[in-house]
Length: 295
Image (cartoon, rainbow, N blue to C red; front, side, top):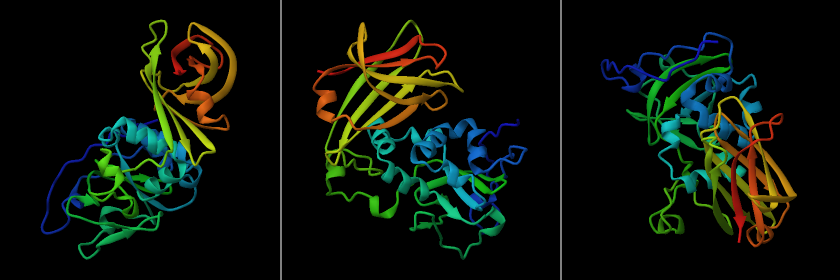
């Protein structure tokens, strides 16, 4: 399998859009869909995890065609950890954000003309076309061809217009980046520490939504690529695990992310004594990270 490196060379010609003159990125060399292209490209690992969390993978593996303006890992890294975790925990908001990056139809640079002002996205809003790229993002690689469309790399995560925070709203007041103002009624973050020299560590965000949903979002670094790491919430502590409270979605080794919606009340989790334990794999129960959650 030939992997795609997201790079582009700027060659400005005439009065056309500057980004439309980027040299096309090398394709994956097979019949991968737009999701397959992203999965085969190391610079899109966070995007792949976000698409999975939103349940959009199957949609974008369909016949399409789709044009995807794909934020790189560096683009996602511009967000604060709180903003990113909150976004990944709210499937509805995540879906809106991600579908704002998708345009129905296949548009290569040769299809984009100076008189085109915007794209109508899958989310429904208009995405402005600029000299630098689209919306607030600069296009950094173009025409990554897929079997069901085309992918462009961008350097910023785009914000659907209705979710842009004004200077006076609560999101701006609380220091939000403006990408996403959390609708969580309450939330707590806990540290997950490496176990046994695994090199895996991170945090878990426990959030309550609308009084009847508890969302547990795990974010780890150092996870081995290609694996799936089981995560479980227990009573007790990391030194003395007791009864299992809930099995959580496995953590992706490629992205380090996992999001689970639980029926366990938020107050029961943060008000009790719990431990969140992450293991190597389904076949290897050795712990790689653990953290105490609650009081």
